[in-house]
Length: 197
View 1: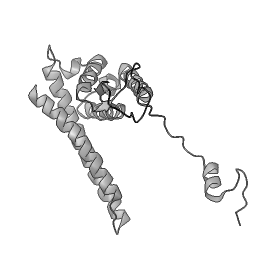
View 2: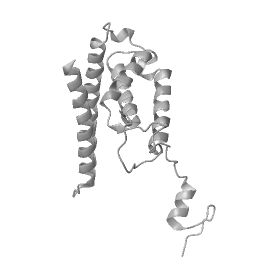
View 3: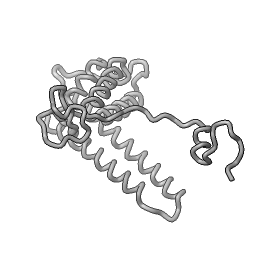
View 4: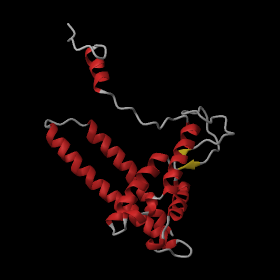
Protein backbone atom coordinates (compact mmCIF):
# COMPACT_ATOMS: atom_id res chain seq x y z
CA UNK A 1 0.00 0.00 0.00
CA UNK A 2 3.00 2.33 0.51
CA UNK A 3 3.71 2.45 -3.22
CA UNK A 4 0.10 3.43 -3.79
CA UNK A 5 0.40 6.35 -1.36
CA UNK A 6 3.59 7.40 -3.11
CA UNK A 7 1.77 7.30 -6.45
CA UNK A 8 -0.96 9.55 -5.02
CA UNK A 9 1.60 11.99 -3.59
CA UNK A 10 3.57 11.90 -6.86
CA UNK A 11 0.39 12.56 -8.79
CA UNK A 12 -0.49 15.45 -6.49
CA UNK A 13 3.01 16.91 -6.73
CA UNK A 14 2.91 16.54 -10.50
CA UNK A 15 -0.25 18.63 -10.59
CA UNK A 16 1.54 21.40 -8.65
CA UNK A 17 4.57 21.18 -10.94
CA UNK A 18 2.33 21.24 -14.02
CA UNK A 19 0.53 24.34 -12.75
CA UNK A 20 3.76 26.15 -11.84
CA UNK A 21 5.47 25.17 -15.10
CA UNK A 22 2.48 26.17 -17.19
CA UNK A 23 2.27 29.55 -15.44
CA UNK A 24 5.97 30.21 -15.92
CA UNK A 25 5.75 29.25 -19.58
CA UNK A 26 2.74 31.52 -20.03
CA UNK A 27 4.40 34.48 -18.33
CA UNK A 28 7.84 34.16 -19.93
CA UNK A 29 8.41 36.33 -22.96
CA UNK A 30 9.68 35.04 -26.26
CA UNK A 31 10.79 36.66 -29.47
CA UNK A 32 8.66 34.33 -31.56
CA UNK A 33 5.02 33.85 -30.59
CA UNK A 34 4.53 30.98 -33.05
CA UNK A 35 7.49 29.07 -31.61
CA UNK A 36 6.23 29.59 -28.05
CA UNK A 37 2.74 28.41 -28.97
CA UNK A 38 4.05 25.28 -30.67
CA UNK A 39 6.41 24.45 -27.80
CA UNK A 40 3.74 25.07 -25.15
CA UNK A 41 1.21 22.89 -26.98
CA UNK A 42 3.68 20.04 -27.43
CA UNK A 43 4.93 20.23 -23.84
CA UNK A 44 1.42 20.47 -22.38
CA UNK A 45 0.25 17.54 -24.46
CA UNK A 46 3.18 15.45 -23.27
CA UNK A 47 2.59 16.46 -19.65
CA UNK A 48 -1.10 15.67 -19.99
CA UNK A 49 -0.27 12.22 -21.36
CA UNK A 50 2.21 11.59 -18.52
CA UNK A 51 -0.33 12.67 -15.92
CA UNK A 52 -3.00 10.51 -17.54
CA UNK A 53 -0.64 7.50 -17.44
CA UNK A 54 0.18 8.12 -13.75
CA UNK A 55 -3.51 8.48 -12.90
CA UNK A 56 -4.32 5.27 -14.79
CA UNK A 57 -1.55 3.38 -12.95
CA UNK A 58 -2.75 4.77 -9.61
CA UNK A 59 -6.30 3.61 -10.28
CA UNK A 60 -4.97 0.20 -11.36
CA UNK A 61 -3.05 -0.04 -8.08
CA UNK A 62 -6.20 0.92 -6.19
CA UNK A 63 -8.07 -1.94 -7.89
CA UNK A 64 -5.29 -4.41 -6.97
CA UNK A 65 -5.34 -3.27 -3.33
CA UNK A 66 -9.13 -3.41 -3.19
CA UNK A 67 -10.54 -6.10 -0.90
CA UNK A 68 -11.40 -8.36 -2.62
CA UNK A 69 -9.14 -7.47 -5.58
CA UNK A 70 -11.13 -6.09 -8.46
CA UNK A 71 -10.55 -6.46 -12.19
CA UNK A 72 -11.12 -3.52 -14.51
CA UNK A 73 -13.85 -5.40 -16.39
CA UNK A 74 -15.86 -5.70 -13.15
CA UNK A 75 -15.31 -2.07 -12.16
CA UNK A 76 -18.45 0.08 -11.98
CA UNK A 77 -19.35 3.68 -11.27
CA UNK A 78 -19.77 2.72 -7.60
CA UNK A 79 -16.11 1.64 -7.46
CA UNK A 80 -15.06 4.94 -9.06
CA UNK A 81 -17.01 6.82 -6.37
CA UNK A 82 -15.30 4.71 -3.70
CA UNK A 83 -11.94 5.67 -5.25
CA UNK A 84 -12.81 9.39 -5.27
CA UNK A 85 -13.89 9.27 -1.62
CA UNK A 86 -10.67 7.44 -0.79
CA UNK A 87 -8.66 10.24 -2.42
CA UNK A 88 -10.25 12.83 -0.12
CA UNK A 89 -7.81 11.84 2.64
CA UNK A 90 -4.99 13.27 0.49
CA UNK A 91 -6.85 16.52 -0.24
CA UNK A 92 -5.49 19.96 0.54
CA UNK A 93 -8.65 22.03 0.11
CA UNK A 94 -10.42 23.20 3.27
CA UNK A 95 -14.16 22.51 2.95
CA UNK A 96 -16.11 24.18 5.75
CA UNK A 97 -19.02 22.35 7.37
CA UNK A 98 -22.39 24.07 7.76
CA UNK A 99 -21.78 24.58 11.51
CA UNK A 100 -18.42 26.28 10.93
CA UNK A 101 -18.45 30.07 11.46
CA UNK A 102 -16.45 30.44 8.22
CA UNK A 103 -18.96 28.51 6.09
CA UNK A 104 -19.31 30.43 2.82
CA UNK A 105 -16.24 32.63 3.37
CA UNK A 106 -13.62 32.39 0.60
CA UNK A 107 -10.82 33.70 2.84
CA UNK A 108 -11.44 32.78 6.49
CA UNK A 109 -9.59 34.99 8.98
CA UNK A 110 -8.59 32.15 11.32
CA UNK A 111 -7.96 28.38 11.26
CA UNK A 112 -10.80 25.94 11.84
CA UNK A 113 -11.10 22.15 12.30
CA UNK A 114 -12.99 21.55 9.04
CA UNK A 115 -11.75 18.66 6.87
CA UNK A 116 -9.33 18.87 3.99
CA UNK A 117 -10.66 17.30 0.80
CA UNK A 118 -9.84 17.03 -2.86
CA UNK A 119 -10.89 20.16 -4.74
CA UNK A 120 -13.74 19.72 -7.18
CA UNK A 121 -11.61 20.94 -10.10
CA UNK A 122 -8.95 18.32 -9.36
CA UNK A 123 -11.54 15.53 -9.22
CA UNK A 124 -13.20 16.71 -12.41
CA UNK A 125 -9.87 16.81 -14.27
CA UNK A 126 -8.89 13.40 -12.85
CA UNK A 127 -12.14 11.81 -14.04
CA UNK A 128 -11.64 13.35 -17.48
CA UNK A 129 -8.16 11.83 -17.75
CA UNK A 130 -9.26 8.44 -16.44
CA UNK A 131 -12.25 8.40 -18.77
CA UNK A 132 -9.93 8.97 -21.74
CA UNK A 133 -7.37 6.44 -20.46
CA UNK A 134 -10.08 3.78 -20.06
CA UNK A 135 -11.03 4.00 -23.72
CA UNK A 136 -7.40 4.22 -24.85
CA UNK A 137 -6.74 0.97 -22.98
CA UNK A 138 -9.42 -0.95 -24.85
CA UNK A 139 -12.51 -0.13 -22.80
CA UNK A 140 -15.83 0.34 -24.58
CA UNK A 141 -17.18 3.93 -24.33
CA UNK A 142 -20.68 2.73 -23.37
CA UNK A 143 -19.22 0.66 -20.49
CA UNK A 144 -16.88 3.37 -19.21
CA UNK A 145 -17.31 3.50 -15.40
CA UNK A 146 -15.77 6.99 -15.29
CA UNK A 147 -18.62 8.30 -17.43
CA UNK A 148 -21.34 6.71 -15.31
CA UNK A 149 -24.30 8.86 -14.35
CA UNK A 150 -23.55 8.34 -10.65
CA UNK A 151 -20.03 9.77 -11.15
CA UNK A 152 -21.37 12.84 -12.97
CA UNK A 153 -23.95 13.41 -10.22
CA UNK A 154 -21.29 13.01 -7.52
CA UNK A 155 -19.02 15.58 -9.20
CA UNK A 156 -21.93 18.01 -9.49
CA UNK A 157 -22.77 17.48 -5.81
CA UNK A 158 -19.13 18.05 -4.78
CA UNK A 159 -18.97 21.21 -6.92
CA UNK A 160 -22.14 22.64 -5.38
CA UNK A 161 -21.16 21.71 -1.83
CA UNK A 162 -17.67 23.19 -2.17
CA UNK A 163 -19.00 26.29 -3.87
CA UNK A 164 -21.31 27.00 -0.93
CA UNK A 165 -18.84 25.94 1.75
CA UNK A 166 -15.93 27.95 0.37
CA UNK A 167 -17.90 30.91 -0.99
CA UNK A 168 -16.44 30.32 -4.46
CA UNK A 169 -18.53 30.31 -7.62
CA UNK A 170 -17.88 27.55 -10.16
CA UNK A 171 -20.35 28.91 -12.72
CA UNK A 172 -19.25 28.80 -16.32
CA UNK A 173 -18.46 32.17 -17.82
CA UNK A 174 -20.98 33.23 -20.43
CA UNK A 175 -19.65 33.68 -23.93
CA UNK A 176 -20.05 37.18 -25.28
CA UNK A 177 -22.05 37.63 -28.43
CA UNK A 178 -20.51 39.54 -31.35
CA UNK A 179 -22.84 42.54 -30.68
CA UNK A 180 -21.68 42.73 -27.06
CA UNK A 181 -18.05 42.64 -28.22
CA UNK A 182 -18.70 45.43 -30.72
CA UNK A 183 -20.30 47.52 -28.00
CA UNK A 184 -17.35 46.93 -25.68
CA UNK A 185 -14.74 47.66 -28.33
CA UNK A 186 -16.35 50.64 -30.03
CA UNK A 187 -18.90 51.87 -27.48
CA UNK A 188 -21.69 51.54 -30.05
CA UNK A 189 -25.12 50.34 -28.91
CA UNK A 190 -26.29 46.98 -30.32
CA UNK A 191 -27.66 47.37 -33.82
CA UNK A 192 -25.85 50.69 -34.40
CA UNK A 193 -23.61 50.09 -37.39
CA UNK A 194 -22.06 53.56 -37.46
CA UNK A 195 -18.38 53.75 -36.63
CA UNK A 196 -17.46 55.97 -33.67
CA UNK A 197 -15.77 59.31 -34.50
